[in-house]
Length: 323
Image (cartoon, rainbow, N blue to C red):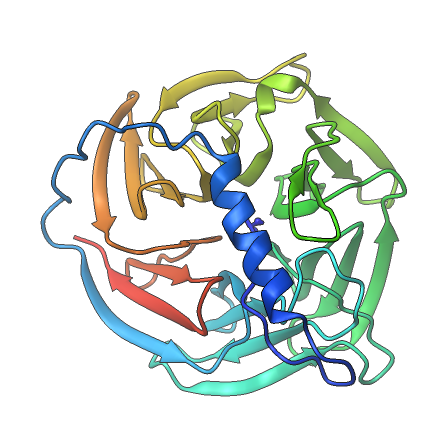
């Protein structure tokens, strides 16, 4: 939950059927309870200079924000209801860097032959926008919104975040969670990362309990590795390379981790547990942004050195200037 997410939901009315607001609220409460929220050491002060410059409202359970540097546009994935409901009412928005919503429903489930249920993490490869949608990876033309491809991952439980390797292969986390009829979170697992090759062949890249409900994933090009963050009780930031049997922990923090981005040599991670975005360098945690409840799949605008922050419990995204 790019629970992303993790993903969770604020109830927003579906186009053709109402969303059960009480059930959605139960899902949110249960996700928090699933995390180890034992007494935490008070966080250190945030790093100086991180400044909120824009707040953009009008979204419906925004889970992920992605900067497409080629078009210089921000994509926002909107779950619009339950993160596991196949209700075909999810949508992708286009937002300009000045905060103007260029097209709220640039890609919309139920329109133009598109199926889009609960979109979460996103990644761009050339002019193709890849989106994780419960148990399907969907590909769209990033300029026109036209559907290009759908890859069904038959055994997937809860696809979450997406990244693209230098080879063009797509890597997607499977957080391995479900919700029962009253919104309680279940974790049937398994915890794993899928790989979709350029030939669309689907394989399991890594499967391990040590992934700890894997949520965010990104490529660390300098380190020639993937960085994966755990939403579960493990509270770990992980490093993994293809060929490794299991990932290994490189840092620990508050936990409830969702999004992850590489910013220079820093690993930036959003946390539900303490409502922060933190930087991890050589395993040391530094708070970059504090007081941001339900921070989901963060994005990074390298052109402007900005962090892009969606709030799945709200209807807004925030844009922060990094020092």
